[in-house]
Amino acid sequence: MKQFEQSELLKSLPKQFFASLVSKVAKVIKEGHDVINLGQGNPDQPTPPHIVKALQDASENPNYHKYSPFRGQAFLKKAAAAFYEREYGVLLNPEKEVAILFGGKAGLVEIPQCLLNPGDTVLVPDPGYPDYWSGVELARAKMEAMPLKKENDFLPVYEEISEEVKQKAKLMFLNYPNNPTGAVATASFFEKTVEFARQYDTCIVHDFAYGAIGFDGQKPISFLQTPGAKEVGIEIYTLSKTYNMAGWRIGFAVGNESVIEAINLLQDHLFVSVFSGIQQAAAVALLESQNCVDELVERYESRRQVLIHGLREIGWDVEAPPGSFFAWLPVPKSYTSEEFSDLLLEKAHVVVAPGIGFGEYGEGYVRVGLLTDEDRLKEVVDRIAKLNLFKKYVDNSF
Ligand SMILES: Cc1ncc(COP(=O)(O)O)c(C=O)c1O
Image (cartoon, rainbow, N blue to C red; front, side, top):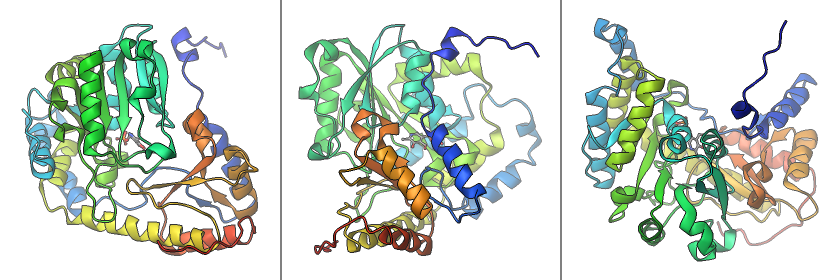
């Protein structure tokens, strides 16, 4: 068969680092081993039944069998605005300050194409979620990394970015609670971010995918709660993690009116909006009881307790993440993150994501998802204990 050559644009896209991990995992499973996969970010629990029921009912509405309105259903935009007011005290104009997305990823990848010209500069967190890189490359823009270091609580330090880069930065991605480090943002960090954006005319895109997941009674803050945030940026919210709806592909962008208009305009050309039955179920998720969210956070918090406590007990000096459903664990000095995750896969049949896959500053860590039940997490600890990698360590105050 004739092989058509891919466009230069496709050929320039970043290579999927985790593809090689997926094939290594498949090999170990094929050998018949009981593999515990904590390497991915796919929520393991089902969507709450009242949301599923809302889709079942909505799917019978013949109006929804037609094309949806191009820019999404007004009722979902109103629900998103009501959600932001109820959860964060943030007021939004549903028609001008909300755009409906096919999941957060779609918005994150679209944004650089909405605002940038080839060669423009984008600041991205390192380590960070690799989909930011895809959007930047599709817009033929240029990335500058903002290192996230433990000593700075995994927040970028703007003073460390060169003046030249700051002057050029047209866009900045941020993400708290953070994938992969589990860090959360503070109000003062977001205030500094607004100041930065004003000074350098940079548009801020805050990816709030794990917005619902904060531990120890701390609710993660929205960037839009910061005075002036709406003038300088947007926030991307997804229902994937908050309501275990990753397969449904539904999210929204909120904030600066001109950026929302740019997203809507690009999407007018790319798609007709999401199936209205899904939009209706999403509105139900946002507006009805949030008990399911509280239960989910409790579930992740007790899994965190089991994993972190267990690993500390076997002598691995790890810290408990304050948010997200990931733990970011330092690898023993004699290994790279890739070597260490290969070791865990081969010898313990446990899959973790090597930090280097999230950027240069991810080296020295592995990311572990709290995405299986407590018994399996205990099993993970037992299997790692048998490798005798860590010296017994006494402080177990967590
Ligand atoms: C940091 C971050 N942002 C965005 C997303 C995208 O989520 P979705 O496209 O399902 O809304 C994910 C999913 O894993 C994520 O980890």
